[in-house]
Image 1 (cartoon, rainbow, N blue to C red):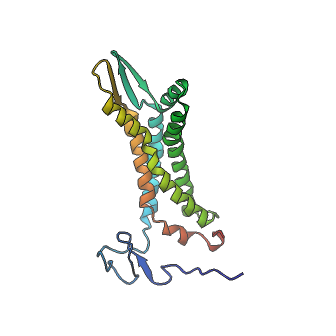
Image 2 (spheres, rainbow, N blue to C red):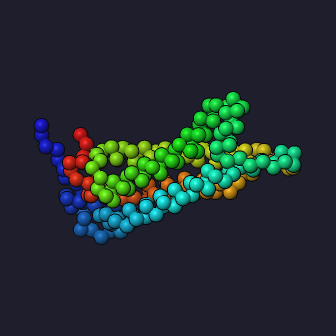
Image 3 (cartoon, helix red, strand yellow):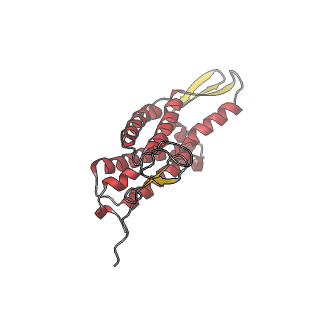
Length: 209
């Protein structure tokens, strides 16, 4: 079996511009194309990502405990949490929609937080996990993140379409803000992280075939 080439851009004296994606020489201080400052590695990105992720995990609690929507029906005000809204859909035999909302509003945010936590722990403590699997999981987290706003999208459409004064009215409740922040912060936590740190801090033996 031939030995795989382990050369990286840094060992070859190259540096990627994170703004325009042009490959520059490591000796350059600014990108030759867009004149942005060049950094071989952003070591502070790990702390930034941890801070954003921890904040998102804290906000996930009020996002699920407090009401996410307020419905006024003939003067009677009722509140729905994410769980009660899904349960109502199940009781009204709208199970496919309930499954979609459960996946988008509960399963996906939790999986994103857990997945990013594993990724950050692997970098921080150099866990013996395959880089290939970690990067594949990271790209999946980035891809599914856009579907996490589905619950808020449904609420916003309902608010825009259902407005009949005191007879029937739907408004977002406090948990909607917390939920939106959870999605935003997890997206930012994945975006600010310099994934090149993974390849520097984990040993070659942890690389998968």
